[in-house]
Image (cartoon, rainbow, N blue to C red):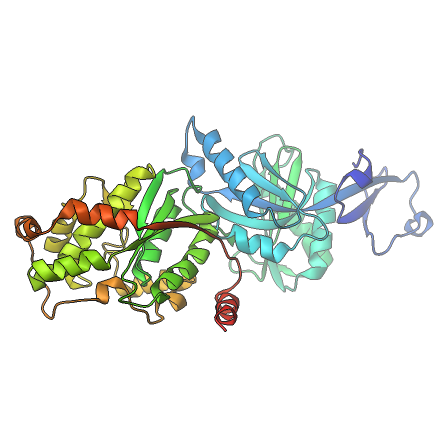
Length: 453
């Protein structure tokens, strides 16, 4: 029963359900109002059901948390508010282990759902019709959904979040199923139906929807601490960063370049990748480090087979210094075991020895096809495969070492002024913040091309 002033609510549709003392009822939509005399009923009562469009969000791993669950919910709540700040909507509220986003008539539902699909901590979401948790209101809502849904078979999937509703889930399925069948003449089919009408009852509120949209899963952004990712601009490292963000990490980025020995394209490429990766955490911090001087010294004084190993050890040392300055607790790389010469087990051990911080390698057991699949899903693949000159392609030996040892690398570094090279690279590094870009890859690529002309 609508008791508050209607103009204080975001009313999408009003339904009338007319009942008589005998219990017989007649559903009436706002499209066509039947006159009482046409109903042939006496002593008519009219209930007005106010239906609101809402996006219903279910949590992922947050449901497994204990006493600190409220903190995870609050972080997710705040992230979604920031994510939607440039779009019109009514409100975001926490309700009974869920998040509800109230929609306005002018809300761009497609864009809102597109962004929410990228949010970590969300299991799934649904564009729902919210009605009071009453049988008549549920029937009114279903009667509105039926004409906009094409189906020959259907099922009802009803769930109660609380047990104070008079019917249990099975009884609700049967009751509402009979109602839908009487209006649609479609058959009930529990396996692979053309349409599923989801009914979710939570306290005094009920939500009706036709599909669940998968969310990002994992844990909310910023709940897992900070880590610094070595971002090359290739296929692998953006996927590694994505995997860490999905575990709640706030990921910072560092990119090594050899300009002016190479073009600036690798730096622009990384910025474009980060505009996409920032969709998952709204914005990203990028540190750009000139690496040519370090490479020249290694080429001049170290054995050629060890060049790439030493490049990587210096990158790890510089990245660790940046991470410690930013209070990040770990480094992240896109290494996949055996994929290239520097990623053999022996070489990974040699490179890791240069750091005291933990180094996470989320892709270590993945093959290239799996990594490429994820890169396509998160829309970094098309940028990553574009040709550029990265620093690791400079001064590469013909026969790189594949089974190095820590002792071997340390002996080679005796001829190098390690601390001076690290401090020099850090002093010349620059830092910038990259905001998220929610346009599609094709739109973003077109915008970039226009900016270059």
